[in-house]
Length: 323
Image (cartoon, rainbow, N blue to C red; front, top):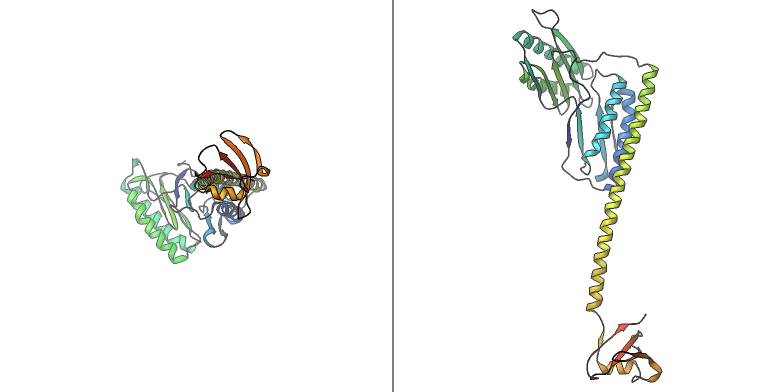
């Protein structure tokens, strides 16, 4: 009867880049997979993968009124969207929530506002002692079929007092949405929503065998999607590094060539004369343009090829090392 519960309302990414792409991606995939197993059993999961700066931490929790099947479907959606935050090292995705979102289509009268305040107060009181989850419904006085519906949820990592404090803070925010017909608030640690429409899911204690099969299928498919996303990111990283390496290689070759050009050997004629045995005929390699080519041996043992030019023998002779 109300707005969809599975709508992605907000994705918040961190501002710090991951430490090591090669390690970050498999750690992220492993963390999502570990949580997946826990979500299938309890609808809540925390875990971590890795060590030091490359440690990847994860937390996931479904709203308390979701069936296990709906919970797994919700998580399957969330885990495939989070990679959008890459290459930043953190992110959150909220389905059906925001800091303060008010439905502003219909203004409600004072009777509805009073019923909403009572429903919110009841939920805030009940949730901390009920594993952080409560739902309430209060009929609007003077009407036949109108009620105020409220859902409150704390993260399971909060203790009783922290849950209560978070929900009290959330209730102060959400009351600011009155007199509009609907409002939501999402804090770091808790969620609350009220509406004049029954958005609450029917509480289900047991899952059918068919539902369990669907849960397993969804879990496998979502795992494959995250795995493929991980591979895609990995390929991107490797390709980027390959391109960078080629660029660096090209730059290094350029530097080497310049270095070689700068360090080309230059010798006086007397040095070349000694290296070739006074340009002995036995060291003659051949005749080329502008001169004769001789083989010579430098004092350090290197063999060189020398072209004796038909110009002034006092000029410096430019030579290249012979392999």
